[in-house]
Amino acid sequence: MRHKHLGVFIITFAYSEALNEVHDKLTPLLLQYHFATVVADGHGVARPLPKDTWAIASFMSLSELTVFIKKIITIIPNFQPEIRVMTRDDYFSQAFSSQA
Image (cartoon, helix red, strand yellow):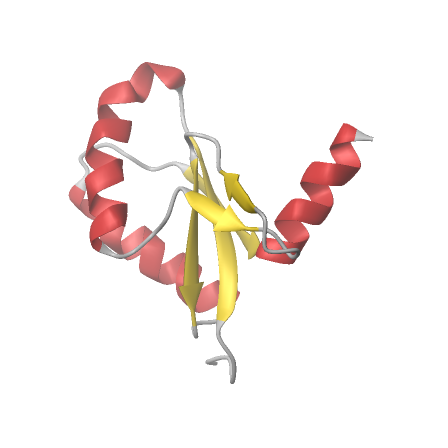
């Protein structure tokens, strides 16, 4: 089900730090699909994301976006990370609540 409005989503990949070569393959792949490493929070402040975290604006639902991501990363051999997709607002709510 597609959103009626554009949503901003944050995607976190959980994988071993030993897979740095995977990150080198993941970065250009995600950039090709317009994922970003910096996202504006709910107040419009640009926030750089951690190395394993990406942002994208999309009309897809959370489940559609998760399926899409799983499909595009299949070109990276032996890479099956845990993928967490959430809205930008949920991401920053969790990030700021964990800092308190």
